[in-house]
Image 1 (tube, rainbow, N blue to C red):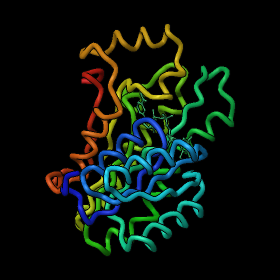
Image 2 (image 1 turned 135 degrees about the vertical axis):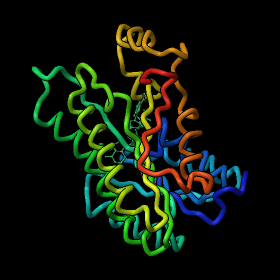
Image 3 (image 1 turned 90 degrees about the horizontal axis):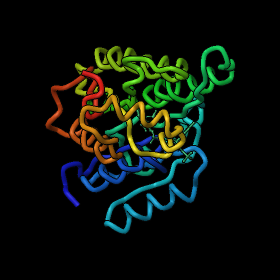
Length: 249
Ligand code: NAP
């Protein structure tokens, strides 16, 4: 375990699986205490907690739907109550409800926007006053290359992920003078449950778009996040960092 983030408290949404899990493990390995948010998968979240504790770190589970404003406020309160502060927020929770526009339902659109975009607002809002008071903080929002270039069958997802970029830049401007940085990461095609659900045909097409010639790993994304939340990244805010093997350049 390194001590880069020792004394720091992190809140990671969607930490039970995939990219959020890798970020939680990495921040804990760097010395932070980590609150693990997730929606329903208690056993997977327990596994992440156990893995952090086995390595000598500290973790707590904070189950709840990021789309619900009051729920999120309570979860943040719980963490601050237990650990006294909150330094790092990783807005990673996300879902897909893919369909061609002609078939996309209102519910497909609303659910993706409320989880992926409003969830970012809910969590950021819940920590903003505290981070301003602390005169320091790090917020990293998980966008996507799809938010930069669009994608067939993902109008809802692309709108949410592009929205996150506008949100990130606005929050960065508001909070910069208080030592709080807000950045977005745009992963490309990363090997998680989310992409495992894609058809072989879609996967083949996506692979052709990656100059690096391979899918990314959750750890590839966690490496970038670990840098953005570190002291070394104090002068970087409002930025959008692609972790995509060169997909978008
Ligand atoms: P994943 O493997 O499907 O995991 C999603 C995580 O989000 C799970 O921990 C899930 O919890 C949690 N979650 C879902 N809805 C939630 C809610 N309403 N409240 C709280 N937690 C919720 O996804 P992933 O591939 O790791 O993606 C993580 C983030 O990266 C997402 O924002 C995604 O859009 C973005 N991203 C992914 C890729 C990629 O290629 N994989 C590319 C670009 C961007 P449960 O386990 O309880 O369901």
